[in-house]
Length: 338
Image 1 (cartoon, one colour):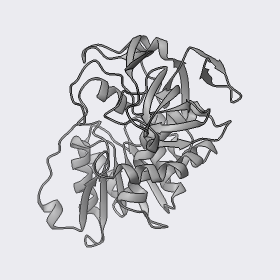
Image 2 (tube, helix red, strand yellow):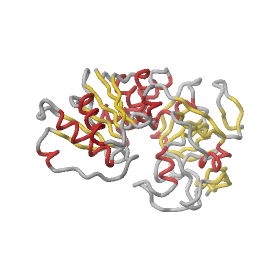
Image 3 (spheres, helix red, strand yellow):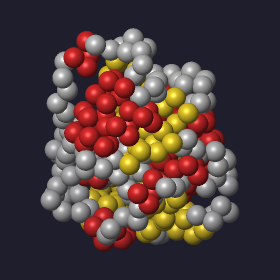
Image 4 (cartoon, helix red, strand yellow):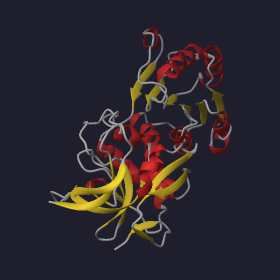
């Protein structure tokens, strides 16, 4: 049994999603519920999934993309939900979600802000709460701090008790903004490996944790620069690998693992259980909704997904797709029409 909805449908991995009718499979058990979708973030993770390049991709088409969203259940409750890989994605006017992956939101919550911020903030929040729990006063380097997730990681680290946070990135304009959101120092990642390595060693050699959104050549160079610059190589350095903007592989000398107390691990789907992720969501949502973690977002109609998908992104702003068959609820955000 199916129900017809309008959705962003991926019919080919070589073409952006098209807004068109889609037959949504009905819930098959009591754990699955229908949700009227209000807002869905267009995250980098969503783009890689829609292109078939994410490591969780099955290659099955057609598909509806998306990893999370905000919606309203049939009983009227407002919820944030995390999509299940086995179910249709949330970029649709309605979708089916696992009720166990829904977290209630208070009426009046800023659903666009929640949809924009939860995914990029979740990576560093879970990394510093579950993967390598941060201790009060520890220092953190964010590698790739000029991206959306990196900017949020600086705020998250501070909110969770970091004593000092260093942000490293390539975009000089956005790098200059980092002190305003909590960075105690910044490092410009340039094309000159020697100069970049020296700057990283000076600013961040003694950090306790690294949150890495880059990987590739920059990460390999940074690892060696930090380890060689540490006064005591026996003091633990935890490197948490989250993104691979600069490349999917690195070349790392084995001496990096033998000559220092260096621990390399990742954070993502599979590294932390779904249950652990879900347990962290209410506290993170509260931080975002009350302004403890800030993000800039722009809302655009889901019906325009094909043109939005290929349009240049505004640096520092996360795009959120909202349903067009809607009226404004009391929070001033789109809500599906009855």
